[in-house]
Length: 415
Image (cartoon, rainbow, N blue to C red; front, side):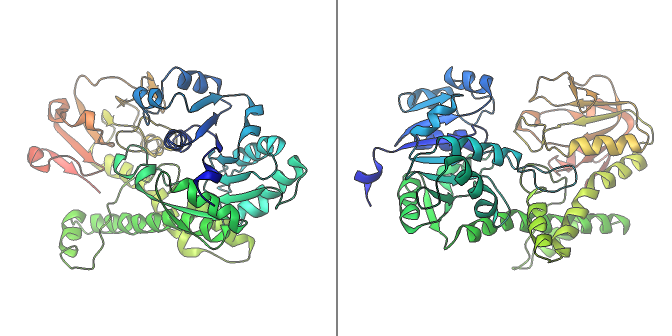
């Protein structure tokens, strides 16, 4: 199989968010692309050259406009030789996998898929989900059996706001139901990045999910150590610095663990583990520790400024990304309220919302008894926090991004 076989292919990308849009734009440099999304405003904006996630510029969209079509018309899906599903996989309130987006996407694809097409899932799921959950939906809706069409799994590794690890600069895991489908995937994905073939779809699903489970557990260890050293009256950062002088010590930073991957993926793996009668104690222990971190920080706030006026700087789930969903700052606000704080304000410069997590979002003015520097956006690097503090005020530096020397005469704490 060579470029003569794949060169005239049309690729359909289902879901034009943080994962789907950058992928579609890179593929559009080599293939005809149809970008499908159910959000009409999203599609309208993209057709006018605007990406509200700021992952793709107007210039990038302009460059490939002849090769890409954005649409809400599901009939366009039927034109695809390769159909890539990149929709969210969040959690239900009970922390079970919420597969409603994957289910809906599978149904609409199944209705329009043509014989010989490959359906590739990029959404992170538990091991076995693609074949056990998604495939029956595709077969039912298409009235075809596997072999008349094919399935694959190539998990996303997107990191919003991180230009050093964009989709064309990472290794892409690929897997498929049939060898010929895997080879076609290898040729197509190799156009934009390096690939690594897996022996089965379940192996690829498992490899993807443990990437974030490992990070969750490692961060949980450092969060727990931070809590312990605080009780011992030690600066955790000094302890970590000392340990890091040993050649094989791997350092992580304590903090709030938000986002769409790290807090979610462990529950997906645990769900599958419970289904087969395995108790994933260690995996869930890490989740429990990280979920306690907002409560720990709120308790420190109570010690530093009981019932004082509080300013929270930054609210998104990570620096330089204008995304409030899945942000643990929301949990921190709730924990502070539980501690009795009622006079709080937030300042999130990357969003225009006048209210964030129930707090007024505006440029800070006046004096505060406590400033919580929560998210270190690049746009905040020159903010003069010392001018916003009351005489005996305090600062909590969650990400340890502030210049500690500037606050020698100010009460300062960081996890």
